[in-house]
Length: 160
Ligand SMILES: NC(=O)c1ccc[n+]([C@@H]2O[C@H](COP(=O)([O-])OP(=O)(O)OC[C@H]3O[C@@H](n4cnc5c(N)ncnc54)[C@H](OP(=O)(O)O)[C@@H]3O)[C@@H](O)[C@H]2O)c1
Image (cartoon, rainbow, N blue to C red; front, side, top):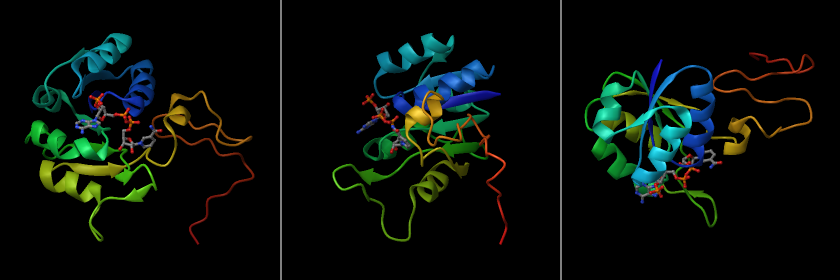
């Protein structure tokens, strides 16, 4: 799958590294070109403008701090319309870890409104180290990337 990654920080590194290892084709872009290039080199991938990465992507990951979201969405333009966008972001200020979004409006809704993509909220509830696969979040379970959670048999998921 062709995955376009917007943002070149810890989450891009954690998820992109696992996706590259799984054989996906990646392109990455970010505010600091050198950081995006370093990750692209690590994965054997390419970096380009926000617009080009959006054109390339079948699926996109947006992984930027909330301060950078407006400019990121503006640079992406229209090329993610109708595509799946993975939103791993937590729009919080870091001093008290409180939401910065307007009550009743989520960042996911804003991404969907601006891009016209189909937003999936994912990966935002665990630290990047968990997604790197090097950190166990309990004594019993390790999380796998991108979609599988390994659940010990004694844990049962119930609909009720
Ligand atoms: N780190 C985690 O453990 C974790 C876990 C779950 C969810 N998240 C969420 O995932 C998202 C990415 O987190 P991260 O840890 O990968 O962040 P990060 O390493 O600090 O940076 C991610 C990207 O955001 C860009 N950025 C920051 N401020 C910007 C601004 N004002 N304008 C434009 N771009 C800006 C950075 O550009 P520069 O490199 O140029 O600064 C970088 O490309 C955040 O929303 C965070 O809440 C993080």
